[in-house]
Image 1: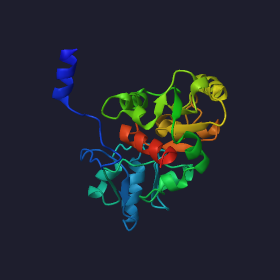
Image 2: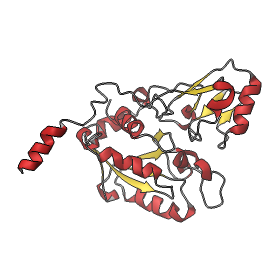
Image 3: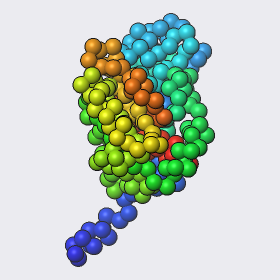
Image 4: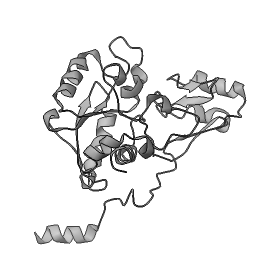
Length: 248
């Protein structure tokens, strides 16, 4: 017992103060893109040709964050003349079309559904479903349960049974082998319930888009309430989206 107390005193308080205080991520982190809409069309086309996800819309001069893997290839063209990635991790939308952006996203807290805040603002229980992903999204979700993030202090927890959940948090490209499991889990969650698509695979199919064994995106199966972009979404991105959508 004395060793535990001594160790606690030595380590001090390690939990992040976010969202009460802003937090700055490492400069190499790729967050919300900054887009130059006055860029030479030839450079934009070059960026689009390099994009492995077809996430750049040339005519609209926008990026589809639902497809983007944040690989950074476009930012290397002409020294970032068209796209630069900021360190802003606060990304998330309630509508799929809002992820097609010129560098801004609508205020998620303002667009969140009011009845969700009323129902789940004090306590939110989620069942996580890995629907055929590479485990990167799942790993960063697990990080939210560490002392630094301490997700449960906000009244948000991941539970083992869908019957104890308020909604599902889906990652992965929704493989055909996982289709029945996703639907069965959703049906087991008592109404009213929420659906969260986390990561580009769940939102658009990601690198597996168009594959014969992938459904393409979660919205083909279920009505999605919250989209969290990234590949994988940073733990702080997920934390921001959950707090803005359900708490603020």
